[in-house]
Image (cartoon, rainbow, N blue to C red; front, side):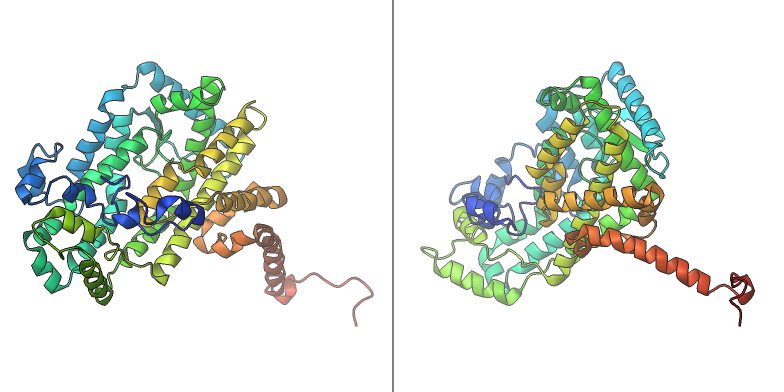
Length: 459
C-alpha cells in the first residue's frame, strides 16, 4: 500500500527529491498514481474480485465495509487501521501525565499574556495517548479530507473512456465500489504514522482538537525530549507554549480556520481529468504492453495504472489555492515561533536549542509537510516559514505587539506570498500606511476642528 493517504499526489516540486526517485521511481507516486498497485498486485494472474477481498486481512467485516454509505472515505476503516497500527506500542496516559500537561499549559498561558494581545484560547487541558489522538481528531480530518476524496473518486471512476471501461469488465466496477475502502485504509495508515510523532493538537498547522482544548501527547513528548538532551519539564513547557500560542490564534481569529479549509477545498474543486489526454495515454500505454490489456490479469491492470496516464495535471486555479494555503500555514507557524521565542527567551535556558530542533524537524518533513504534501501536493518549505517569522518579529520590534497582532484582524491585512519574497519591504509599508491614515484622518476633520495657525501667520 502506498505511504501517502490517498496514494495520489502531484509530482514533487523539489528537483532534488525528484532526482532521488520521487517521480517515476520504483514504488513512487508517478508509478502508482492512485495507490491501487498494492490492491491489484496482491493477487496473482487470473485472480477474481473475491480473491482480492480474501487477501486483505484488515477487512474482517467485509460486508459491512463494502456497504459503507457515510461518504467518500470509510472512516470506520480508517479508525480501525490506525488503531491496529498503534496497538503494539500503545501507552495510556496516566493521572500524573495529565496533571503535568495541565500545569504546563497554564504556565504557558501566563507567559504568553505578556507577549501578545490575543487572550488565551484554552478552556480545558488534556493529555492524549496516540490512540486518543486518532479518535479525537477524526471529525477534523473528515471535514478536511472528504471533499478531496470525493473529487478523487469522481476522477478515478470517470477517467476511463467507455471503450476502455468495457475492456476492464468487472474490475471497473470494483474501482468505484472500493474507493471508500481504499481511501479509508490509506488515511488510516497515514493517521497511524502521524500519531507516532505528533506532539500537540496543532502540529499539522491547524487545530485538530475540539475548540478550546489544549493537548499534549505525553508518550511522543517523552520520545522527543529524549532526543534533545534537555530536561523533560523544560521540553514539555516549550511544547505547551507552542500549543497555547496556536490555540490563541485560532480562537481569536475567527476566519482563519475557514480560510485554511477553503484553500484545501478550492484545490479539490480543481481536480479534473482530461478525457482526451486519457484516451491518448491509454492507447499508447496499451499498445506498449506485451499481449495488450488482459482484464483477467491484475498485473496487466496494475501496469496500466502505473503508467501515469490517470494522473491529473495541476491547474492555475489549484496553484493559486496551494500558494494561499502555503502562505497561511507559514504565517501561522511564523507567528507561533515569534511569540514563543519572546515568551521563553528569558525563562527557558534551552529555548534556542529546542527552537532549532523544531526548525530541523520541519525542514526534514515534519507532520505538517507530510500531511499536506500527501493530501494536496503542498510542500512547506522552511524558507517561507523563516520569511513569515521575519515579518512578525520585525513588526513587533518596530511597531509593538498590538500593531503586529492587528494584522490578524482581517485576511486582507496579512502578507501575501509575494510580500514574503521581500518581508522587510512589507514591514516598512505598514509604517507608511499608518502615516497616510493619520494624514487622511486630519484632512477629514471639520474646519473648526483643524488646529489654529500660529499667531502672526494669518493673512
